[in-house]
Structure formats: structure tokens, C-alpha cells
Length: 278
Image 1 (cartoon, rainbow, N blue to C red):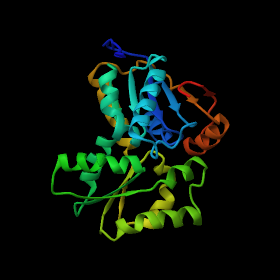
Image 2: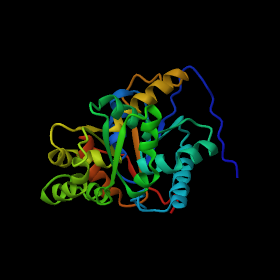
Image 3: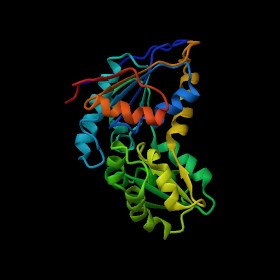
């Protein structure tokens, strides 16, 4: 079935931006979108019933991602931001084939930022098993220039730690140390946090990597990309008020609200549970 949607170009477009992730991690992107595009309304979909995506099959990730996009399009979004690195690395091409609405993923912006930041051309990448297996970051980085050396490490427990609110502390640091030690031995000077959950653990990760390794969070980069795209296509909102954000999750809205408020630093008043896609 062809699920293409028509997008109408206009000078000002007050429709919301759609963002989806497997859980709470995509709030790192929401935070940057609110900062850089304060007049844009946001519809957020967190598939908390099926988190984590990183341990799922390629076919399942693509199916989940298409279902998430359909949900957002029912809310008449003008742009979809795939805040999940796993979905971006596995399903971005399928999403763009099936939908006409502009769709941005987090891989390319993060790769660009890392290549600009490295001093010795040795870049580390941490991500879910699916993201690392796809080699999505390495492919993007080597497209920019083949001079870069890329070293990757899957960190499957990080998503669960973030979802449970274990953002720092001895256990989190010990797990981080175990994952990142092989990358430290490769003399990397730049580390891509290749999952939008990982910036929630940034404090613990930084204690393990040390001050000489630059941590790359692609949330700010993709927010800049969204701003440039909407400006180019004449779709920036003409709202003068601050953005309104509505949050939909497929399970445990109370838990999502608690973790989300700690990260965003404000009350989340529009969190609702939906059974869509389950």
C-alpha cells in the first residue's frame, strides 16, 4: 500500500513538528527544538511499550517506525524528526519511500559534528546493537572523508539505565567504564553518543572518558537541520507564543512524565497513553 502524503508549501505553516523515539530519549531532541524553534508546536510519540528498539530485528524496527510515522501524520505534522538512532540507521530510507512529508534522522548531523570536532581523526561511536551493526555512522563519516578512523561499541544496557532513571552513580559508571574502555584504548578524541537516550547518561559517561574526549550529542545538530529545512521550504510557524508540546506514549505515562520532567526541567502536563501500534 502506498502511504504517501501530500505536503502543501506555504509561507507560514503553524502545523506541529512530529518527533518519535522508542522511549524517553527523544526528549533530548525535543529540548533542543524548543530552544532553537520556540514558536513551533511539537507532537512527541514515545513507543515505551516496545523499548528498546536496539535489540529488535531490522524488519520489526522498520515496521515500528512506519507505524510511528502514521500516528504522527494523523496529527497533521509538517515534518517528522526521527529522534531514535536505531530507527534512523535502519528505517530512514523506508520512511522516505513511503511518506511525502520531510523526514530527518539523527545520523548525518551527528557524523558532521564529529568530523568537525576531531583533532586526530579517530572517532568513537557508541549505540544500540542495531545501530552499531548497521555501520550507519561509519558509512556517513567515511562519505565525508576517508581519512577518518571509526571505532564502534554497542552499549545495550544504556537505554534501560536511562529509562529507569539511573543516570549517574557507581553502577552506571561501572557499566560505562566496561563499555568505553575498548574505545579509550584506541586513542579516540571524539565520541558520538549514538542514541538519543545516551545524553541522559552524559555525566556518567564523561567521568569515564575524561575531559580530553569530546562528546557529540546530535540533538542540537538535528534541531539546527530542522530549522534550516523549515526556513528553506517556507514552513516556519508564525506563532508569537512559546511552543506547545503534546506527548503520547504506548505504556507507563506516569513513569515517562517523571523522567521527562527531570530532564526537561519543567512540568509535562500533556502526557497521554495511546494503544496505537500495539
